[in-house]
Length: 511
Image (cartoon, rainbow, N blue to C red; front, side, top):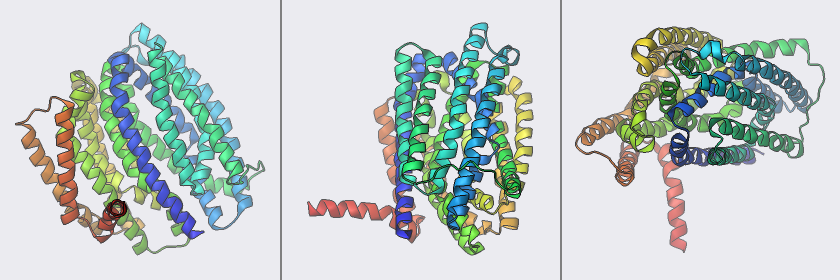
């Protein structure tokens, strides 16, 4: 049984990175086509509608993490009856919430004019209404689907879960391009996304029923347990509000005050942050049930710290390559990829990417404090910081535009996710933060030096075509890997890197 779980975990990580590769390569080819077919205004409008509708996801009230936590708990206790009751309870609850999403989304759709009339034209306001209505239906569909997919994650069935994610990764851009080539523009893209979402629900539901043999039992839950779940979820919910204030509100404010073109540029800059975030969570995401099990079995602080540092180092190795590489080549990439009109997206990405590295290499810490039910403080701190970010952004945007909005987010992230949360991890959770940063700062020397040298070289050499760009990136990546392997990797990391290489060489030798 343990061997099977380990295989699932390894397969989950591998498939996560395959999916991540697809999620990076496909947008690389698809996004420039989409941007040129839509145009800046239409793309900005689509992004703005998506940001406005994303607030509806708050109606999940943070129950997503609660489902995984309690299902993992009941699995560890071999309590299948409680699993099925919890499944039924949340499935029924989320169906009710989905109806609430439809109501709230319809209200937003019929009020886009008073909200965005300063930044959008009459034609844009009309299209915005249609986009919000379609995206609202998509959001409603995602609610019951999230319950079923959370069940699969809690059962550590990563192979199936990641295969479904890969299917969605491939299907979404294909459906979008079909809609664009048929001339349906942003409205067609919104409808295509809804069709893909509709496909996911029966796939997950059938797997739960036929393979996991878990069926929802709709019976009354004990009131104390519901109260306990609500107490756990409320602070996860606050965390969701914070994420929304950081990642959606900037674009909404820009749409209100600066128009759809500003939203388009800001969204392109934010795209690179999403890639880095997905890269980081590919490892930590599959560890959530395992960490929950460790906490329930009262693992020592030393064991949790060891896991925290081990995963953080692996995440840093990958993230540092991406972030340092983007710092050097990002401006050239955006010009070649999206066009000169999106040049400012580089500064948006840089200003938000660097402070984001801190929580991304520490997101195992978030999983630990969530499993320990100690995430309340984080949620409150982030909420205060996020509100300050929104207020400062609203005040700064009229004077400094998209750069000002990104700078406000940068400062807020450094303060909240950097200084305050590291103090909390150290003082309250008991994680050895000084040891963590001692590890990371030693590893950071190579990417820091390579960024400086790379920028100095690019001042003398202009990258004006894709061939030169890819050659330079390959050389940079190769130097990074060699230097990190020699000077920064520990034995565990060297083994992770060298094992697949040795296996390939052995297979080639036998041929």
